Length: 396
Image (cartoon, rainbow, N blue to C red; front, side):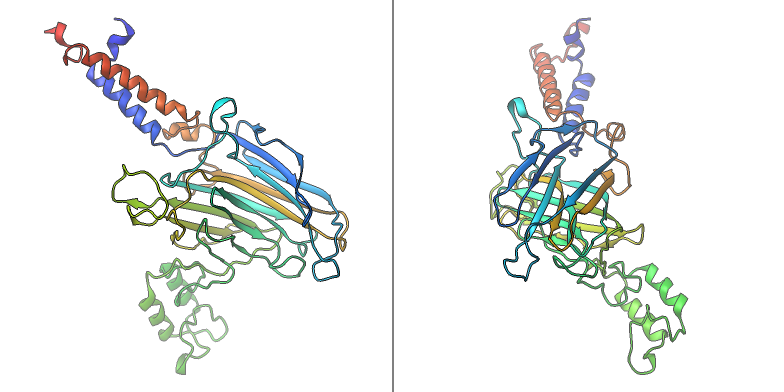
């Protein structure tokens, strides 16, 4: 039987249509790590020193390490005469801000309607955490840039722990894990009032020293874990996702997960526009972190308030690492390790290699889905040319 005749059969034509639809709607999973590296000297013009935008690593590595040595700032520290800072900045992209068509078709630009769920482990190591080091996710959109990252301190040249937060609000929802507290009754600090908090209360009941479950500190319950603290937990059960406190210190491993849910539209066929009256419910982005394998802390789904009411069209998502430099510490260094990538859920190390193929998700170049749909169209058209008989007219 000629090859085309196979596609005249209804079951096979339907299978091709189904395969094409599944491929076209699959979650995008990066299969290459794109590179871009440059140094930016504070108030001086940026100077590109290495790695053109279209350089890439394939297959996608299971771990990626960015290490810099010999960081020697030439400016005085901030606050001193002439105070500016020198920035040794690296950007490593798994999507590129270059061309998405033609000979340099190496990029993927995320769209407002495209749901995604990315997670990874990140660790910053440095002998001088008081000179700020930072690393995390970088969002570059046509309407602005934003960051979700961890820092080794809360300033530029200070002692003390850093933060896990967003920077440059407007493109993505803003959130700071280090300055927010969980709801009343959240005794384990994971941002939610749940059964785990009851366990903390039960284990500390009667204590006058362990006050983790001290939800009520008035009257007879002052400095004493009792039934009043249980009542606080019971009344607040189910509340949360406001986040718990989580400060970052150099050497910590933080798992960072981001879950993007597109806006709900009244008519999916309408074009994407800013300040869209077609939006029923704005999109959300949830940040979930875990320090050194500890309990997860969630921001809860945060609503987009930008003019797109979701991630702006044609947004690139990257890892970003930045180191500051100063004369106060000569030959400073840093090492940032990204690992346990997961582009389709919350299990460390999944979503890479053969895993996405087994799950029916696309790791091949994106036109594959379109090719399958085109093939399905050929099959349907061929069948229709048989007078609507779907290849069975001659079998009667």
